[in-house]
Image (cartoon, rainbow, N blue to C red; front, side, top):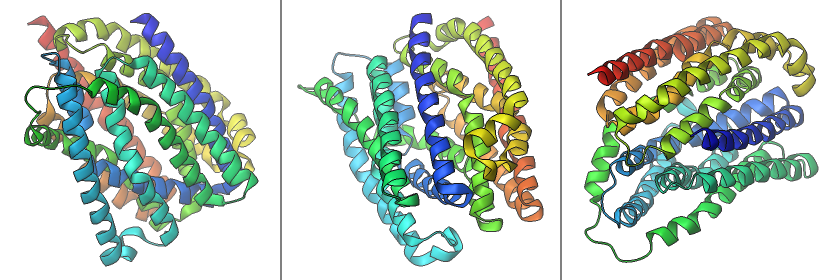
Length: 409
């Protein structure tokens, strides 16, 4: 496991470096307002992809953990492919209908051409959710890591060409995002098609996959609402410039999640065919060590923030310094979530996970809809600490207690 963690960690470090460079370039080239418009557009695209996915990526992880027979992957891949086409058509139709009947109340002042650009990203974002899960189900961790490296390079190259050289502003940044998603999909798809080639026995039931996906779908949608309602509300109340400051702080905090994300990816890749209780016995020490290392890095970032953030993003983003420092406790809650979700889904706790995610989403939505109109950016910080730090920490510490109790039985 240590070797896989180190390799995946190296990829995460590379992704972190390129992502940070991309963030710096987009902040300097677009400014706070342009950066805010880009963030809101990507949030809407991701929200449509999350709604339309039916959370089949989580079902893939569960099917891999209980794989039986030689042709299980062929049956699973073909069923996922058919459902992808159906769900994509329904998602785009729903998005266009929402735009037609409720553009102003739902999307606010976001320009129509940016909404159209965001919708163009949905097919790639939707398939990306499935492809990563399918690659991990096959044990193709190295290929998944290679796809991440190439897609990040494509995003950086697209930003340089479309925004810096051609000066296409926010649409150019969205085009760079699409180029990165296309590169990631092209790398792993051929391997998946080869693995799925050949005869199969009985087909995987589309209804069974959809039913299992529906059990956990509320969790995934709730999670995305949970992580996006702040941006949407802040944009409608305060404006795109405030969104730019706020999102920069959150993006920099997400940099600190590189190690937990790498460890969680290795967990998922090594859980196929292993009983969840036994996999937790192997993972618990790695979870503790990862948390300690991540929090130590967060302490260093708090000290360096007043010098680093203006140096990287420019003086226009100095308000992000105080936001970044105030929101740093989010590292603990998000790290716990990343590290424990593979174990939760491998155990098949779909309905419980969905109920927890819906509760978190409802509470966070209520907090942001109440605090941001009343206090603006300060309300977003208060809501963020409650919704992204305190509540997840309590929930996932409860999951650890449950796993330990199960282990002692």
